[in-house]
Amino acid sequence: MAENTFESGRRLDFSLSEATGAVGDSITVLPVAVAVAALTDLELPVLLLGFAVFQVVWGLRYGVPVSVEPMKALAALVVADTLTTGEFVTAGLLAGGVLLVLGATGSLGRLAAHVGDPVVRGVQVAVALLLARTGLELGVAAPTTALLAAAVTAVVAALGYRRVSALAVLALGLVLAGFDVGVSPPSLPAVSIGFTPVLTSGMLSAAAGQLAMTVGNAAVATSLLLSDLLDADVSPDELATSMGAMNLLALPFGAMPMCHGSGGVAGKYAFGARTAGANLVLGVLYALAAVFAASLVAAFPLPVLGVVLVLVAVELGKSGLDTDHPWLAVGIGLLGLLTNVGVAFVVGVGARRLRNKI
Image 1: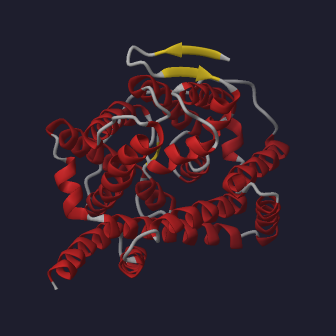
Image 2 (image 1 turned 135 degrees about the vertical axis):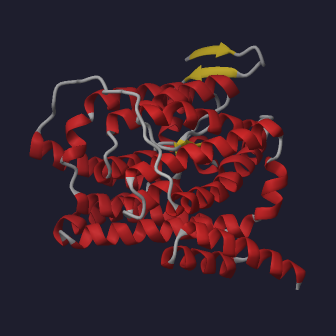
């Protein structure tokens, strides 16, 4: 086992448990990244390269297995064709700018108190419903392939590996794509700078909905979890600052909106990660995938992708219902499905404040 030590005294291990722990943060990253690449103009190798770089950067910065995940609210909206690619990236840049300001000024704690847990959970439910709807629409287009993917899910879950069922189905899709087009020679991701902002009301409401999730799940909850599991002192404002910097630096080069997240930290810890060695291992794995994945995503079977999205939606929906006020979360979620996530967020904040006054 290789081991190094940070100046802070935290270890940097490269043991088997760190390698298996790296998988825990990829369970939702890979399916969502593949979905975004398959259904938008963004390139999967560049998306993976973005995750690779910042897994390493934030692992070394914080010295603990911090997560780097997609901004799921925005990803769900672009996958569901509610946002264009330009609106998706612009919303990510706007959210990144707001997070950078909030973190740098130490304002995140005050904002989180006004949003409240039920509203954050409701936005998660809305995102889960959007992903599930898109997944079902993709699955019905070729039900036989979708049923095959569902059978793989059932077998993996029956064997006691429910958490990795999405990765197993993703692997099935890559195998099917490989049979269809073969495996192309390795190629470096074509990274280029260039971006034209797209300013629309839909983009603004999407950014607002994403910020609701990010404040609660990616900053406050992640900070608490790092403290509980690893005795790490990483404040919500520090996490907000790093998320803001990450998106402002990466999105102009073709990456997708990224954040931290308590789910990724919990996943890494559950699979054995205890140090930032898991981040470095995962960063290398993402970089290798970026070099070899270019041809497979274009041929990835959409019905299989539909099943993957439903699995991600189930896990996110369960997290969204984990609140003392599940009916408020469900109401916000349904409103987000029927209108948009931004409207649901605003109405949810108002409903929570009204409820607290009654």
